[in-house]
Image (cartoon, rainbow, N blue to C red):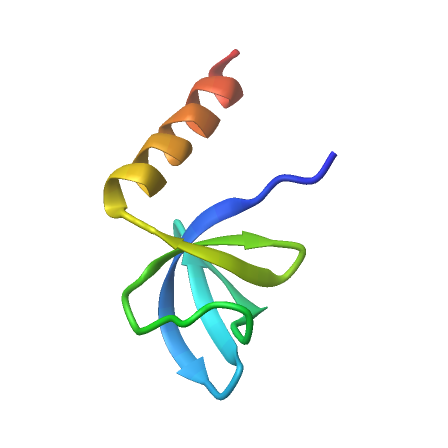
Length: 70
């Protein structure tokens, strides 16, 4: 099973972006979606697949925390 995770764009270099996932940073392909610094994004298999609101990203992160606590 593959899971897409929400993160925040911290830098952009061409079609690559650095995305912060609660302190862990990953380089992701950013050529599929128009992004800007500070955007909350959903990353799947190393690619940014959509931007999202802070509320949406926070809700997904909270769900993952609940699953971890089970």
